[in-house]
Figure 1 (cartoon, helix red, strand yellow):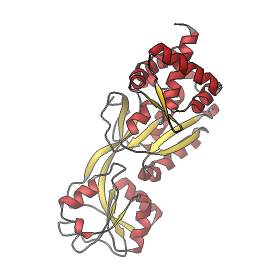
Figure 2 (figure 1 turned 30 degrees about the vertical axis):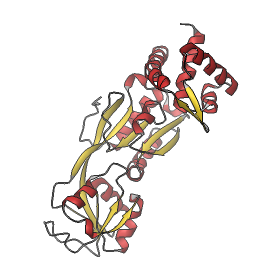
Figure 3 (figure 1 turned 180 degrees about the vertical axis):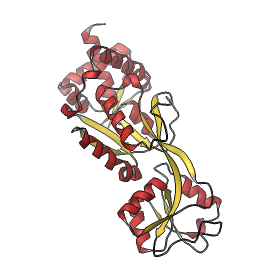
Figure 4 (figure 1 turned 90 degrees about the vertical axis):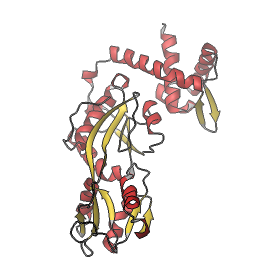
Length: 305
């Protein structure tokens, strides 16, 4: 295969990842007309439009989606062969890295990640993107996310996955309005604040339903960030992961944690990325840094996939 052929295929992969002629041109350090010309050549070569413009977005055709995986993998193997990954210097890297987190993940996992970056003397341009469980797999595969942390299970061979932290749920209230000792009637007469399950934490809502507590829900919110201030000002109760409740108690000393009267666990928080062979040296280093920053030590560093 000629260098020209490789450059065409690399343009295809980058265009698939960015979904933008301008974005692809910026990443490849070429002009937009050059990307458009290469796309025309690729369309002729594969006998397919490959991308159709919808507004400002270049949407891949089914044929492009079919081609992306094998071509990206092949180019990644070529890059790994000619690049000495051991020579990667995080202190000299100032490129962009994208971390996918839920709102609750931003509050609990972003501080230790930033602390680890500072300790390593690394200064990448870190972008935190709100994780949407419905599209997270595709965003990881095409490189819109470099690393993601979520309790949502993405059971796919297209991604690398390893658990980093178990999830146990507890009740959180203000110290002014504590719950009675843990028992079957501890929530009698108490009202709840319920948080949207979009971030993957479905257990609290399931528990409220299963134990007949939904009629006691007084407030429903979209984000966890509002919960601690509301709890301090009211007699409401929130069901939250223990590691999140601990963070909130650190922010608001007037909060108090109570154990639940029934088992309260879910799938662990897991770290996701592209598969090993598809990672750049920078992505591999960043994945390792995030893993060590947020891991509770409950699990080994070996990936399940």
